[in-house]
Image (cartoon, rainbow, N blue to C red; front, side, top):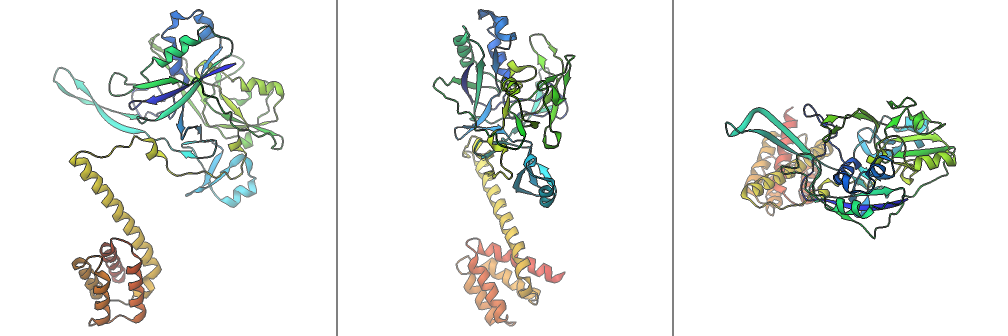
Length: 451
């Protein structure tokens, strides 16, 4: 088997809807299905030496494209990853922990979003939303009651996919050149979306993901793509026993999600048959596989393998740890193309956003500080706090401490030594925006005393 690797760069935002629906709540994909690349190559169907054998024999597979982060390929976050509810820092591998350990952790919630690298770096892929309106050519204005919107993947992101050739292919160069000369992807390609560049990675060497094989009597199958299983009568099914013959599924340790969609064939101008899918990222636990079963699964399972379906990784290392440590900083900002504001409006909006973020941060810190220090200031009257607020309005950050210290020690109503010490310590601990911080602190303390 030979594997050709390609890299896709988004030159514009890309719209990849998960269904063919045009109305209602439409979900969007966070990967590029292999069927898109199959369609690009199929445009030259008549130019291949044996088109039928190439496209219908299963000898060629166009795999899904996943985002590349720091030069590393990403994998859909496994559905066996759970986190403690309201605390996503504590991650556990559900199939690796006992019921007793699960009960100790409390209520768990499935971690369903994002991707991970082999080194457990978490990558969250964001979509940008744009509101659109149909155009009325007769009235030369936006058409009434014809609003719609698109969610798109960000411009500038890098993706990688492979094409697997099971047998020697005479038309290998034609496949490569066809993909390299394809520049459109996704929906609304005639508008502002869909521009890409595909490059052939001739010298790229795949580093196979590390696996393990020493866990009790189980193997774990990770769905690196969607799986479409077919029963004995040729009907689509969610029954996992049809992955391969005589496979023994352990449902207690299995974590899957499923979906269905009906693809639209533009050449035929009609919908194809409905597909029932085991979603990418599902983890299926099975009793130890035989060498024959292992060989079958590694070659892909189910239907539509030429479109990237059926790709399974057996026992990837990220399924081994009981409590995997995700490096889970939010990567969405690094994926988006970074642009500095240029117009007066965007500069104004950026400044307003920064001011809002600063005010929110100060409010949170003030609230926390009041809970800690209220016992020292509960006897201070509202008029004294009003005086502190007035000092904040007439002082700058440099003179604030001296002005407040003079007021609380020499005013008509003096503060106790402990109260004065506590307030001075608070002022000295603030790095910036001292006047704004102390003014809000005085307002909240005064309000709490009034209640």
